[in-house]
Length: 183
Image (cartoon, rainbow, N blue to C red; front, side, top):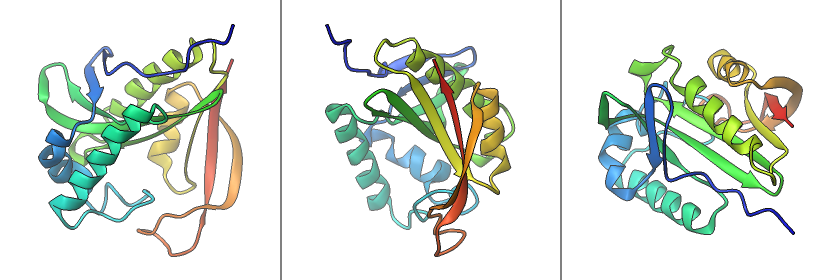
């Protein structure tokens, strides 16, 4: 018998954070929190949003991804301020593996937000009988994201040459570090 398809809970708690499904109704928080911030979006595959419509469209896509079950965009808030969105994380399921991407609002950098949430997600995924690998990648200059992956229990597996496009840094593909944790 095949194990059930992997899914992320729509809401879960870590020690300090409540994490929940991203909704279109979160557009103002996402837009103001990081979608327009050039420094926060520096190492992302998309340019900062220039309009609220872009953010709404992004969140509409997030809701569709949940329905399809291939990607699970989540928003992060502190237990002490559950209505204040401070970041996002997106697990993406690909057969027997799950990959991750995340963003933390600039005023919450260096506080272990992404590390704590990604660690929870990695442990959750690897406890599922259909998942054997978790992974994430970052630009070789993105030291903060490299630290998140290590703190989440991942090990650097490779340098992927000219692999990832970060249009806020360069018009050409850049080298990326690939981290993983397997069972």
